[in-house]
Length: 136
Image (cartoon, rainbow, N blue to C red; front, side, top):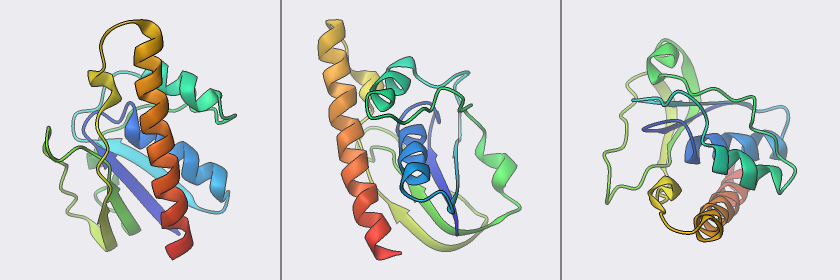
């Protein structure tokens, strides 16, 4: 099964979701991408995923365009509709889903507070994708 997870920067939420899905089932082919990919994966996302034993430090943000010619079982957007426009994927897709999560990169303040926001979003992504796994 091929799954593509999309957001804008492909540096945080989509990378965490990819990490979770790959940890749930090694047989899934999971990729993530963004419409405006950042230069690297967010270091706080790497840190909070490592707390759960999931290493996303080797992930690299990618542009969605590289996946346009492929067929997908699922394309899942994980952006926050209220604050940003979600990418539209025009490729061959069997199922399109949206799971909105706020962007933890918007958190500002003391380092521990910022990490607590990343942990909360990480946990929300974990729960949502565990539920998703039960439906496929």
